Image: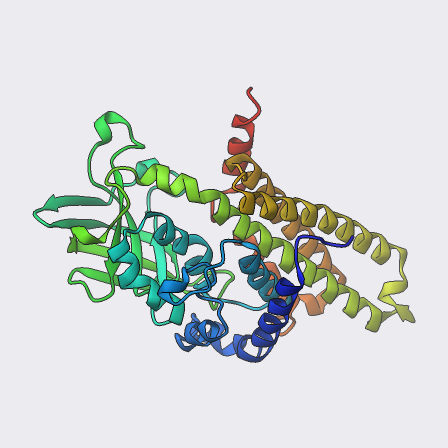
Length: 382
């Protein structure tokens, strides 16, 4: 079906992004996977074509775009190419919105120009070794001491945590009066602050070129000027941004599943078994027809969610539906497409193998599929 959410300007931008991904990312994926992260140079190069500053106000060197559609194009083109943005995706689509929405004017002047030109990269540190998706259970503490906070604790599974210059840390600044959801705050920890250290770049099943870190905070003195938003209101701030974060994951899942389908189509047309093309078997046709139909449904859901996000009407439940459906569908489609590759699909030299292992985490990060079902069920007035 024809998509109707993009204009000619969007499509012109898409061509620029497609060329960038093909030239600056795809050829380097093997070396980046071996290194466990993308080079910092990538962020500066992506900034040169405007990717980093899309939604940053023009006064701070950005493009001043309100729409999420341009971000979606970046995610889609990266997914179609089975490529990787490292921590850039989280920086742009998950962390930057907190700065745009909650930073005061001094903070915006300090940090947004660096975001726009690629000299600053951010990540967000929510997950702790014992909390997982339970944000209200966070135990990292930040105690006010004069014009600073003394930060102590540990975070894990932090996407982009190795490369990040700024880390938005979710910490408990009070007991919340017995309400676990109250008393959490966002503190911006800067690289080089005494007591802030990075542990391992975690060895993951997939997403090998995306650095994922353990972060440690030992009596880190964070200036009160680095408090993002209102003290004690982090839970509300985090939940307000979750719809965009989950839509980002859904868009990526949809795009990579589409890439897998095209890989399978190309492969079965060339591969011959028992004297005929794999594409000529009825089973192949039926499997790919199922995949194409599921992808069409996922695309409709994603496009409606993108439109709703731009209109300011995307609810937490609707974003959860998009993430739940698209990530579960992504795993089904990529698995079927790998199966059609036979033994070659299991070889790392074939991109379908990388898509398979990369996709597994989609049903976990940003809220597990089980959490998504819980969010949706709460909207049903049960």
